[in-house]
Image 1 (cartoon, rainbow, N blue to C red):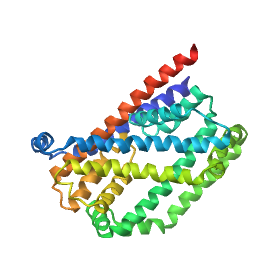
Image 2 (cartoon, rainbow, N blue to C red; image 1 turned 45 degrees about the vertical axis):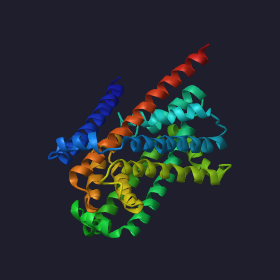
Image 3 (tube, rainbow, N blue to C red; image 1 turned 120 degrees about the horizontal axis):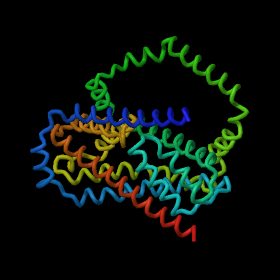
Length: 328
C-alpha cells in the first residue's frame, strides 16, 4: 500500500512540476505581451481556413504512426485492428497532454485491453519507433543547421547557450566518471533483478528487434517520412493564415520548425512554454515583430493542442462503443 501511495504521489508531483514549468515559461515569454494588438490580429487579419487546412496533415501524422506501428507488430504475430490502433494513437497524444510521455504506455495498454496484444512486445516496438524518430530528428536537425547555420548560431547566442562550455563538458573527466558510475550501478541492479526482469525484458527486446522482420521496409520508411513531413506541413501551412508569416519561405519555416521541435523535448504538455519561446525567438531572427510572432505561436499551438484533445475524446467514445459491442 505504501508503495502504491508513493507512486501516486510521484505521478502527481511530476504533473505538478510539468505544469509549473509550463506556466512559468509561458508567463516569462508573454509577460509584456500586447493582448489588445493580438486580439486585433485575430479578429481582422487571420485567414482561419488556412488554420483548418493545417489540421489535415496533423491528423495524417497520427494515421501514419498507427500504420507504421502495425508493420512492427506484424512480425510478432500481433495483428490488432487498424481502427483500434489508430484510436490508441489518438488517445496516447491526448493523455500526454496531462502526463508528459505517458501516452507511449497508454497506447500499449489499449491494444492489450481491446486486442489482446502482448503489452511487453508492443512496448518494445514503441521503443523501436522512438529510436527511429530520434534518428529522423537528428537528420532533420543536421540538415536544417547546415542550411541555416547563421540563424542557429544567433539563436544559441541570444538564448545564452555557450557552445564552448558544452565542448568543455563533453571532454571533462568527471562526466565520464559519472557515466561509468551509472553503468556500474545498472549492472549491479541487473545482476540482482535479472531473474525477475528477464522474461519481461525478453519480450521487450523481441519488440525492439521486430523492425528487422518488417515485411515492407520501404513502406515503414515511407510512413516514417510521412510522420515528419506531416508535422512540418501542419506547422508551415499555418503560416499562410497570417500576413506577417505568409511571406516566409519554406526553408526558413523549416528552421523555425526544427527549433520548435527541439523545444518540445522539454517535458511540458505538448511542449507548451518552451515551444512558444523557441518559435517566437526564431521568428524574430527573420524579421517578424515579437507581438506578431507571439500571436502566431499562441494561436497555432492552441489549435494543435485542441486537435489532440478532440481526437482523444473521439478515441474514448470509439473505444467505449467497441467495448460495448464486444460484451454483447
